[in-house]
Image (tube, rainbow, N blue to C red):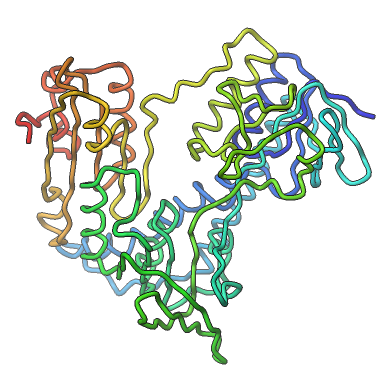
Length: 448
């Protein structure tokens, strides 16, 4: 029986990072994966989604170019070219991940891992033993119980469509649903987005949510809040007939459900261990990623925390450092930035206005809404929105939010300053780069 110092179940972002760092500390490490290296992010998440987002922007870029003097023939989009080039890039990245593991000395075990007990994991007929076992299996799309739901697809399948539909309905109000409503619309699909609550992106700043909804609607996405799909029927011509909660009906060629993901722990054999789950079905861990079974750890999406690749990477690194070096094992979750690659982009770091009002005795709010210089000639009716939240007690900037082009690029830089404790006075004394949208963050002088 092969024995490891660390056996990782799941070769996604967090698992691969933990395996590589542990091996660099001299540990004997094995990693089990039944699908693809890199997990959701590399294969059916962040990376291919961003590539599709780039592709979807070209349609508006071509339109905008006309008022800048470019005379263009009508553009013709070819879906198979995008899909296949994306597939080639993802295959390349899988190869890179495999190379990283091999060079680190990590043993890659292909197949489905299942716990036999607290120290043994079986893959097929082979059983592996480890002093430390890490659960890093991530999540999997979840479908609600709706009649005809078998005719819907998830974000896993959207990346591999044989052909692009003329019409699509996207159900959901989180990152994935909002991003793909924008992406499909940008690629020329007629899109309707349904969300069962009164406004999407729950947990984000209220004004940011409102501005994004307005901008997406202006671009042509049919967004319907307080609406849901209650039944799905597949017609003889393969189109879908949807009945909605309101009683309305919709006809569509494709139905994408992006209504959440759940930990991929089915058939993992956790019942053979002392690992417990939370009420929401995630693996219960403490701040050191320890489960209730000593020697078994879990991190990343399977634990229900921040479902963000950079967070999983930080967690994997921290765990490996604690187990096989002298690290604390703790991850600092203060001021974690994030972006939604909708059209327009959204990015944020720190507290929303609503959260800040609950957390601090007194806050100051600074806002700026404007037409981007680019659109003064493009003629596009699109606006950029920015917002800073300041704790009045010490003048520290505790939140920054943006809706607009390249929001993620701008907020990443601000996240460093905000995490370092920058005050509004520091922002005010910083010279802006002119002309740029980014300079608005250092020219907001009057609180609202």
